[in-house]
Length: 206
Image (cartoon, helix red, strand yellow):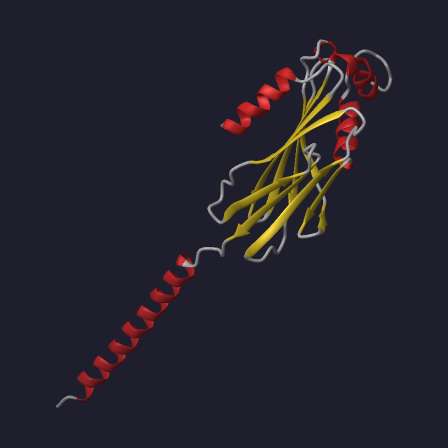
């Protein structure tokens, strides 16, 4: 909550000539979710609207929104233990052009990446934001994981928060279910063996 309030304060108080970019990462055992909020300052609003509204008709079509969202995601570099990870756009929300011109419009992008075959142990996830570097102000944070298997142990940022490295530990998957199945199977085998022995003993009795 403190991190979200701090981010909200930065959003409400950022300068007119800055492009505020707030990134939040959520790490799970087999995936990572990214939320990126883009808020152009009033001095940059017309340029931002022009970048999105490519046909200059005064509206943001679905194709224009997808194109801008795709360009923003291309400006992001995500690595797990030094290995590049591809982000896929999951959702995009765009304000009206007028809201952006008033400095009140925030573009919200949601993306996800699959992390296949991640072994248990310590890992580092690194995000680098290269979108609009000349006029950007960056914020970056890792959210508290929802899975108990993931424990964030540290967050490292460069001076302008353009780069965020998240150290975390992935705990092994719970074995309770497999152990329960093994115990049940073993118990059934013992019960069957005991029944066979008892039946054989009864048949051999005079």
